[in-house]
Length: 291
Image (tube, rainbow, N blue to C red; front, side):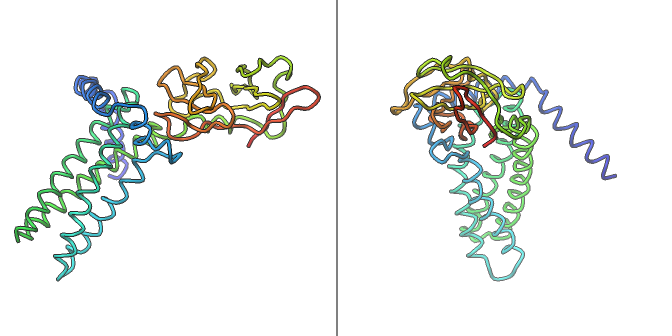
């Protein structure tokens, strides 16, 4: 029954999320990834900070597109060479996608890492199948190459399903602060007296019960959502630093840094900007509204 299958899949995903036995492997692998991918600039590059968007989901389009196209060609006659070329392209392109995925995975919560670990295992199986498929095809064993290709596609599909669960169910890689905007009503909201704001300092306030961070820089004011885009950490408890000549607030949970003047992400693991509200000063009072 369709309903039974859906319930079974939900139960399976729940068991993976709660599988504490995976933590022994996951914790060691996390430490290994963090050691091997060292340096803030390298990690930021792989997170997609420069892009303002996670890089991993962008890169996976190449191998998945190539492998799917190869599968179609394998079902048609006289397309062996084109299918082999696509399988090879997809296999090579999967490597940078895997590296960016590992970098993102290492900054996730433990429950997310459990799903991510199985996601990575499925993709590793897919990669092995496609590498074997490439070798078989080059060696003239096209029937074996096709079988390995279809097996790889099935494994990659399972990995993609788990990746979707990570993003849509567990909110990995998404801007977790944005839903706070839906709790703010329309119109301008008074927040704080401008004179009470410290110069080049932060103040924690609320707009419709939504925590916000108010930063004064000269005669200008920036109002940011106070929950970090990465994992909802309390930015109002973060440290103010200078990064690339800009005043930034550092999340105390995972170290993401955002410019206080415009919310631009300066350092990961967050890959998206911190949401900024429109602000103005009227009669000495700072007001804010939805962007």
